[in-house]
Length: 483
Ligand code: ADP
Ligand code: G6P
Image (tube, rainbow, N blue to C red):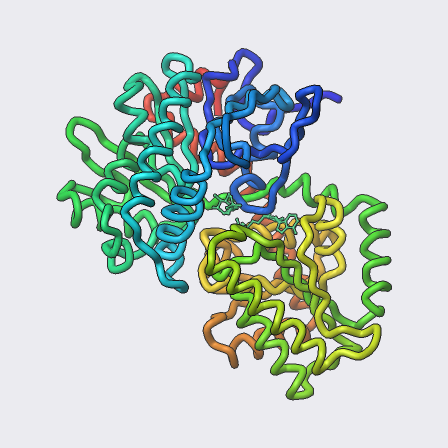
């Protein structure tokens, strides 16, 4: 099959002239005895975004293969070179589960859970960032473009600039960047900011995040900054908002496949052919507002506003970061609440909530999106939320209501969604009812304009916009064959 790289890559590009650095490699956990392994669309926005972009584009991906111990040697996958960075058990605990996901993650998400601080976590964060920087310095060819991703690796741009000043370095943060009041809590705030400023371009999901960053570099480091530029010694670091997106065409084509349409019909039948299906798809994360959503649904059932026979909720919540205590506590609470609601409102063969914790392949997800009359995406805080965009892309007949939290990055781009504040339980209930009872003509109009927007603003547009900004000197686009 002929393939066209989604990225602006051209045939003369070499694998080591574009290097993506992300904590996770997008591969299957298991490597076959013959050394083969496959792309793995592990649940999570970063891999979902970069996977369609890099597939068949000559590039190297530096990341962690999962597990602990020595780094496995991995074969190329679809032309992308995989370079794995090892993590020890201690690194996993103190870097990934500790500093990244129990200090930074909660601070960056409005501290909806209490951030924790431990000095040994910071040591591990530095150590692992140094290892990623060294692995990248080894593979990048002279003058290569290196694109560092997300909060696990905020020190890498600075470390890499010291090791390899010839590189053009981009950094993109997939999660929110918090207001100064929150960021200032971090004991190592100055080092984290300096690390990011090692990049030539620091990209965020939203303009507000770039503004927060500009304020902080002035406040903490005393550097001159606007929302577009920071002066760092003899360099200018560009900053800006680049809302990440999805492969809109691919998702629409998948949802339009006859087998996916058949699967959606069967799913509706298996759900008891209700009048309306509400769907939520999340990683099991306290930022996603799962408990608030369950409460809203349960109160609507208790108040007689919705009936189980007519309206079912399908909640997909794939477990995530399972050794971090806040995630364990959340899972226990969610499962207890699902059990309570089903016990109270369900009947034999008719649960109120269909609760699924499995990872699904893309076709099954597309079928779920097709069957959902209302998609409830109500995080308390989210950098973007690609699930919302996937739902819109999958609604090939322009039907379906998107209930979307104001606190998801996607809300800034999809104002035609039914917007809600998930902290406001009454508002959440009213929003859900409004989406369930909306006039189909209104639903169709909203969906059409969201689909038109996503058609233009897809993952390819995101990469072009980011990389062309990174290419201030003009060298990158020229080298890659134009923009
Ligand atoms: P986050 O990055 O915080 O997990 P996003 O909504 O941006 O949130 O991205 C989640 C990605 O993970 C989406 O691409 C979605 O399709 C995928 N995903 C979520 N749940 C599942 C699941 N159960 N099986 C497969 N993919 C999933
Ligand atoms: C979010 C983060 C990603 C992360 C993903 C899944 O999308 O921004 O960096 O990869 O969640 O989380 P995990 O901890 O499984 O990598």
